[in-house]
Length: 131
Length: 190
Image: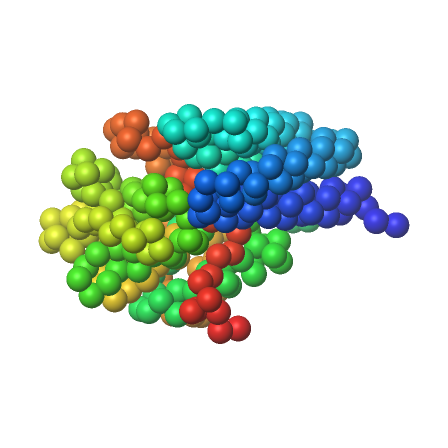
């Protein structure tokens, strides 16, 4: 039977890959112009929501409070990603540019937090193994 | 421990092999890579960071941010040259090539040597990364096998460079590094 720690590690790995993919999609979208960005950002908003939901679900099996906190922060950034992507769809000019930049920044921050959670789990496992 | 590392290689192709190897170590769970980018110093002494095709303003921000990070890795005076001098770093696909932190200047080079000995010479390339590692030997051994030289500074040490944080950069350094392996098609040889 799979150990709980391994399951958490696998779940975090999948979540991290999804968050990385989301950042890639945002990054690719920003290279486009006008309507094309907006079409992509509609999808980004949905993806951000899906990743946030998978983190909330995945967090349920996590015991480590520090890891839980990092995942909660990732969710906060993903909610901001969603909000800013939605904002970019209805704005123009400076407000639009700001929303696009902020969508990318929050998307990047969400990957960072998940990545830090992965590192924390790996370090805990390594410490446990070497005891 | 959380570190920023710069691995210097003699050419761009080997640097990309180094980047690939770094992400392989991450895939194996031996280190965790939070973000990485490859920087080149061209024949004119200017720095370029390879980025995806992106919004020019964002590409410029990536270039300036990575330039600041390189300066910070070189030590306080290197960072001072990178930031106070208004220097940046060009983003290759952004089409903007700024005046780089001039690590070619003798005084800066001496100071960099005092701090970390990190200097990127003309024609060299470097992998710059934000990593969590339980032991430095994992990355060192792998990069040495590829001919790379590793320089590192602790994230907390960089954060202690409070004078460096003058509000010029709105985000932490990691915003400027790719959170996944990004290798331009020209360098994909494996």
